[in-house]
Image 1 (spheres, helix red, strand yellow):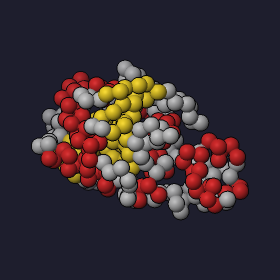
Image 2 (cartoon, rainbow, N blue to C red; image 1 turned 30 degrees about the vertical axis):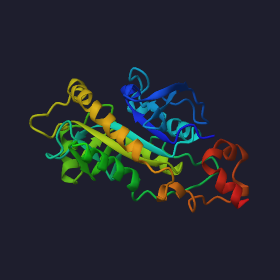
Image 3 (cartoon, rainbow, N blue to C red; image 1 turned 90 degrees about the vertical axis):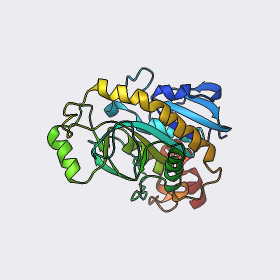
Length: 290
């Protein structure tokens, strides 16, 4: 039974969005362990949504420690088909100023061995990821921000670094020379897993600083990031609420059938435990092939 069609990942402050009613807290256990915390279900602009605080209550989970698989799997079991992910990023371009919003369209991976697939353990699957963000969902998020008069940029590459330390100056300058646009520590694995789970995904990137390449920002601090992030919170909520209201109930994008030709292991060779664990994701395909 679908309990929420739209998932929202971000800071715990998103729970306090004006207009969210019928709130309930739901704990979900997954084959991949515990999510960052309980999901908060509610109604926003007439749509059922599920909120998740990415770093847990009180921001206690480091980017490298996040259980991305559990977080996305939990949303899948709740029936989520769209994920709006809000996160803080540093800017690698002069024109993307602190307090601006970016809706990126590409990723560049600089993480180090984080689990980022549901497959393995006897099941091989390869999803297309050339275009890692849902074009329809991203377009709606961008258009919503634009119509609201928010300074928002469409497109750009998000460098996902390991952290938790900020970049060195040499790294920051290198990313700029490569033409990268923004840098963060969390969204790549979410996007990969959402694609495998056939969930539409987009990032609402909240620019908090210029990263250390900028002569006026040569030492990025948590204080700097959090100060700008608090100012961005209201803007992010406005975009999310507006996008939630405009999302189509029926999906026509490629995300909705990402696994159609992705599973290469013969159904009878998939271990029974893997079939059971991944039933919310692969059930319709494995059943059909059997």
